[in-house]
Image (tube, rainbow, N blue to C red):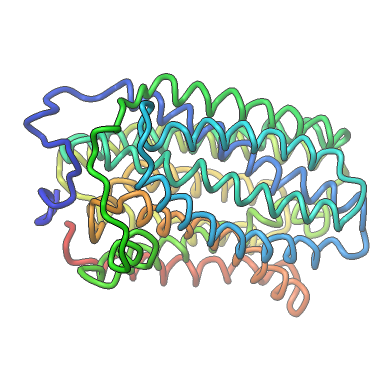
Length: 419
């Protein structure tokens, strides 16, 4: 899969894992479905709806503000949680305690979010939720590096991608049913966060790591475990930059999906709920199908870079449809193209990220930094969209996504270590 394959393996080699680790695979379907689903369902649909209830005249600017606060908190939390999880030693392993405890806390915070009476409280709870959520995400994805041999990473990455598809798009189906009762909708998603996080950890059944050696505390140890990598990291940062641009491009549209239907396409509440639901179904089905296909194919042909780059560009191509006409069918066409692209992307993106890790000993921290791309993109996208909408109107956000995604795809193609 890569010229650095042996270096990228932490404790698991192709020889020691002759069979596909399906137990970990199923855990990585449930896990991301149940952290990403509540997050996306809230941030994309129910949080904007609640902001609209509390401050309708300032909703566009406030969505961008909430995204900016989320970016700052989540960026710090991702690195710290990943690094602390790397050095955690318990009888339940180093990832499980973080996943279980922080899944429970994220559910509690979502419940508090549902009851927030004003914008300042809503913003404060949202910020704390971002910190806790990212303490679930970084340890969870690190299991791909910890416990999966290189020969299976494309396939197990596709399990993770299928979970992301369920979470990303299934959440839209659920959230759209609660536009008239936002608080209850957020509470339903909170229950998914708690149950799914615990269930994922139980299925993964991480072994004890109490016998794993502890590094002596020193300045070098601190730098290794908590700082951005500085050696053997050219491809790592290209993967990071490409992912940031892909997610940014996606959230230029997705971050304002609700307002695109209501303000750009002039739909009423009932038509908006129906359109969001149909769009989510299309994204979910295409995402799952193409994710299931792409991962095993990547393992068979030993190709990761090109699929990630091409699917990133596909996302930008889909944005042409709603640019052409302000009609609901164009967003459904976008959903079809984007769903195919995102499904294939999610299947191989995780394996690509593991293949470009600078140091497998700090896998969770370095994957946590790469995962910042999700957070940063989900923040930059709405911020860029808000600026474009305020200056040029809604129609201009669609070519903006195209440009961003094309640049992201080209950066990924510049990676040298992986085919």
